[in-house]
Image (cartoon, rainbow, N blue to C red; front, top):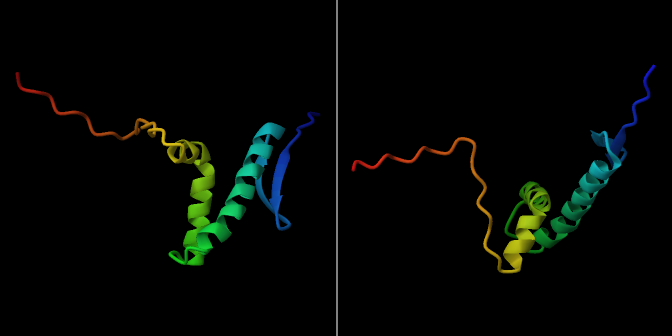
Length: 92
């Protein structure tokens, strides 16, 4: 019989995600905490409806490292897209 350790991230009494390592679970929990803090910040702008505020907060929390670099004035790192269009061949 095998023993399997699982780390569960829970919010408001509801299981959100399960991880096999504590480090991953803690990182996800921190991301959710950041998203929770961003919602009131976005709500203060009155630019978006509540559902969009929550979606944007999650997006910003997931990409916090890129966002921090942008806020510090660093140029964004362009990541290669899986379905990038092939470059046209030059006729030389």
